[in-house]
Image (cartoon, rainbow, N blue to C red; front, side):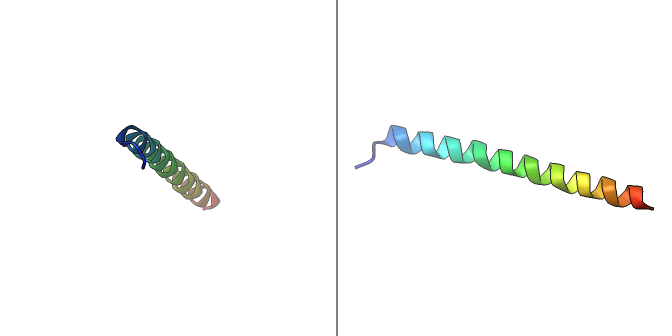
Length: 40
């Protein structure tokens, strides 16, 4: 049986990881747009 404390900890880690992934995606998109705009 998993105690509630570790469940909250896992959820917190997942939340931080998702925020990090979103930040990386936004950075990748903005970098791609910057490269595309510099081609023209």
